Image (cartoon, rainbow, N blue to C red; front, top):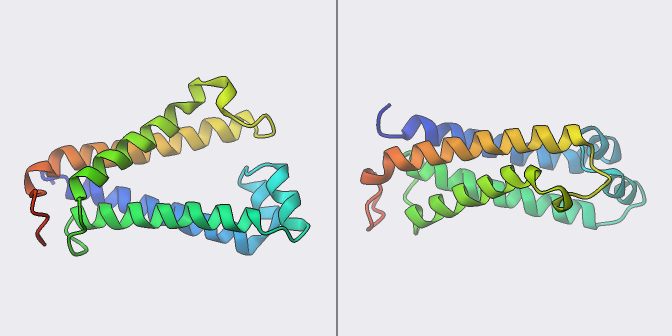
Length: 149
């Protein structure tokens, strides 16, 4: 589709999948935190009944769900959300910055493996590319009034 809907649909689906994966970490417990690269600090805290891993992970899942809603709204699968253009640009910039953070050595916690840093950055850049392409192509259809498409 030349109007960006397919790219935005992909961005929305990928964000929903990532949100569900984060929620699965909470349900799966310490082994899931370890397997998905969250680091030993999070896994140990979860094993010791601490709340902060679940709180942080839930927050990330909520943010990803909101981003998915904006992508799906812009693609026409959900009603128009406020400030779609602004939100899509900010989401794209945020994801791009997070994906490129691998280039900043001191940005990362030392307990995270290089493999996790690399693959999570690649995954985030793929989602950023979907948002960027979809936003660029859909821009004309995303009226400043943000009416339902």
